[in-house]
Image (cartoon, rainbow, N blue to C red; front, side):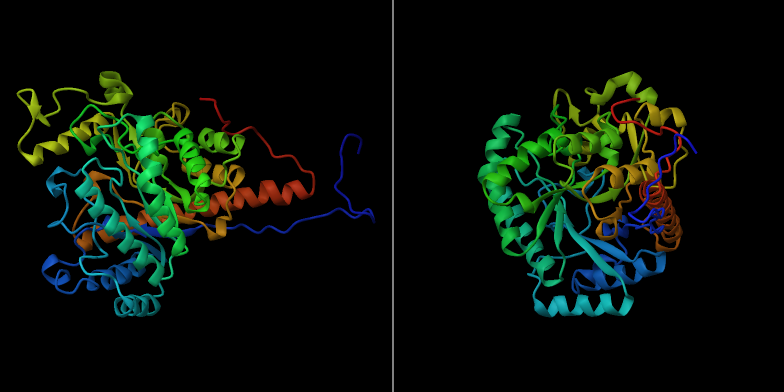
Length: 426
């Protein structure tokens, strides 16, 4: 027929391509269940917590875990009561993780059939106090050692910020103190994947960006520093769409920007966690969150009660609440206003715009939806099972759409119908 261009080979035969969707690898952050193994059992036998989490992961349908580590509560510089989302030390590193411990964990992984996506240690690696910073860096090296012994290829964490310095000064500090960490990662064959949460509630000051690696602009600036020192391949991003929503961004535009700038390779993994923005909260405070009378200050000074410091997180929670994927109803208008995550387009955009191999990319469920953070196995298990099933289904749908539209139809010169979401538009 006139006007139809056929994709034919040299013999005039229409070329085709098989339908071959490539789902991502599903995982879950073990901080989803802080106290799966009671402390009176896991403190004297630290690897019991990992064994029980591997079995729990199998039971709820997650083929992998992101193993969470943290300074033990008795060693942390931040009291647990001052944290909005306490991090889990499922991997207890008060004692170094040696070959015997690794063998025990690898045996449990084999027995359960549950793999390891990566290790996570989420802390401020640029903290201003030199003693605290050394303790965190020493601990991170232990995490690197554990990752290498367990055969993981990456560790996930923050960069952080020195709150006594401005942003450009923090870039100088990053070059001085963080580059050596990346060199240690390189020596162990690891990459360091940075999660981009701005961590507004990390302190009671009126600082919003307490993690300097919070968006593509800073990622690129940091990566250029890394390239200068030969550790560009070690610096990657563990993208979490909830933080983009928190800052008024949308995934498709963010990915498009990275591609346009030649940095589509920077994202190496994903946290699957949403953010549901409350339009009333935005109306009251704007996207800077609650700036005064939060309760973390008393009589014009930071409260002497550490438990009051959790109120610093009203800089965030006054305008948004975390979403465990599958648990939220989504107003279609909210997608257009960048106030919630369009999960299907998120997974489709990753395939269309980023330099990733989906079949080798981990999709890690991170559970921080406050009302559902139940520390009761019988109640939490079906919640996580449902969320994991949702994430698996939505990614499989995106994989099917990508293969059908960009491979099968493209091979036969059949146009994709419609327009869909477009970058830089709301």
